[in-house]
Length: 286
Image 1 (cartoon, helix red, strand yellow):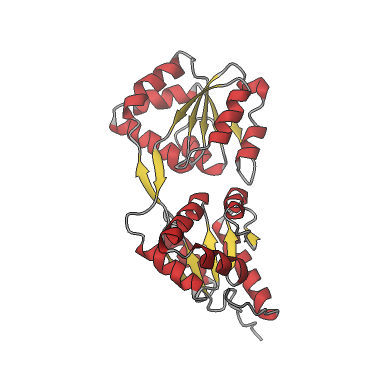
Image 2: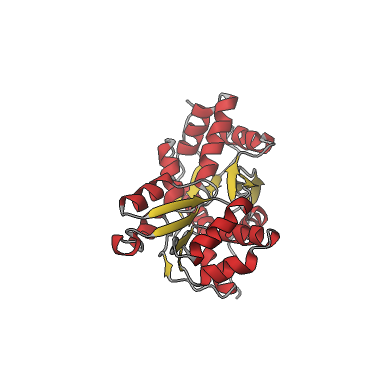
């Protein structure tokens, strides 16, 4: 007799704050029997790097910059796209092929390898600042010129740590994470959270945490939302960096994806919802 498929999410409504891969994450939720409630909480705004490209290429050629650190695949792609638009693509790619390249995980590494740019150093999972610093010891970075291509949020602790090891860090950013122009979907999600109409919320970026609390503060519903996230709604985090942001806002996540990818995150949320269904608790509204 064929075994009947058991839905992981069992019809639960899952709040999703992802922007770039919103449709992919929503489809994962649907496949597992859940209902996605999408409220993208981050907008990627491009930062014009064209004025900095000639100096960067010259610094690489003259070996004033010997190490280039890529934090995200989106940042690497944006940098190269801007170089192409500025007519500096070939010169930048050639210069990068002669530099020591460092990647924080597989996504920027894939972008570079596709172009024949060697990846000399890559951080291990879960690809946080801690793992990146492990592969950038004093012996490698001391007295070296380094270009650091940030993600959309910046990383002051990483810059401080590298400079304390003697690196001369040049910071670059090809996009910024900003609050969406239209926050109505986020406001609606917060209202559903407070009213107990969401089974779980998935956080896939630390900036989502800050933006959701920023919007809740504007609505005067921060305390009610924090209570709901702590006592009623399963909070899922994509990884350690996101979890720290949640902790800092007084909302320790109930589950954290391992490895830090969307499918394990959805699975972990499903397991937590199943456990709660099997062992229900009653929470009263403060």
